[in-house]
Length: 202
Ligand SMILES: Cc1cc2nc3c(=O)[nH]c(=O)nc-3n(C[C@H](O)[C@H](O)[C@H](O)COP(=O)(O)O)c2cc1C
Image 1 (cartoon, rainbow, N blue to C red):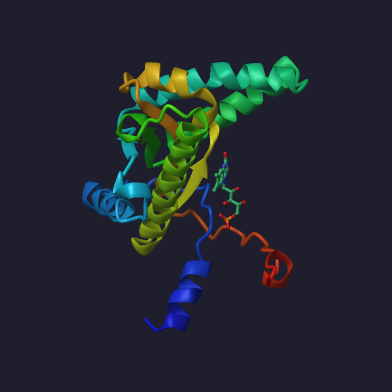
Image 2 (cartoon, helix red, strand yellow):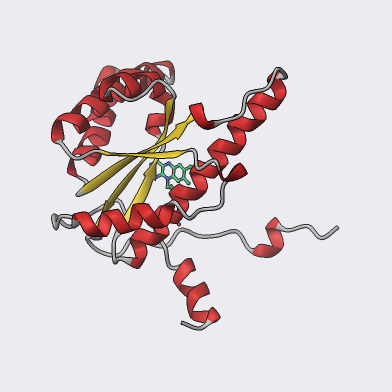
């Protein structure tokens, strides 16, 4: 691959939300997860953890746990019961139907702690940045295998419920669900801001 080809390949990644029913082979998923672990990360602490949601029971448990918190948030936004039920059904169906699903977590137990609250908060932020880099690399590794994927942020808003529903260690904080599978159709490219708009030379 030339540098030009590689740039074009990187730019061709899309969030895929519709998947073919074809399962994702275990060895393919294992490769994708391993490549994700090569992401840059603060202090090489590798705070990412991957919960592979293999059974429909675990997906149902996670969906139900997230649904409770999501319903409260939607109610606060002024949605009525019917609208809330429709949204919950949609997000539950996405989680249940994805050929592969990984809950991306941050393991707070490997972080440094400081007497200074600001520093401790900063450490948590850089750990979240590290986990996000692994998530991004995971999506690219999936693309290299012909898979598509999408980052779903809902678990971040239901960390305690997700932890309890899946019996995760207390230090594992859910950051996102990554849904993966072979794409059903080509997702439309989303527009990007021009580079001129987003850079400032100083
Ligand atoms: C932190 C983050 C949170 C996201 N949350 C969601 C989500 O909850 N649901 C969803 O369908 N897509 C979600 N996405 C995907 C974005 O909508 C998508 O990346 C963006 O619209 C650009 O489209 P593209 O990925 O196809 O280039 C998320 C992406 C990121 C990085």
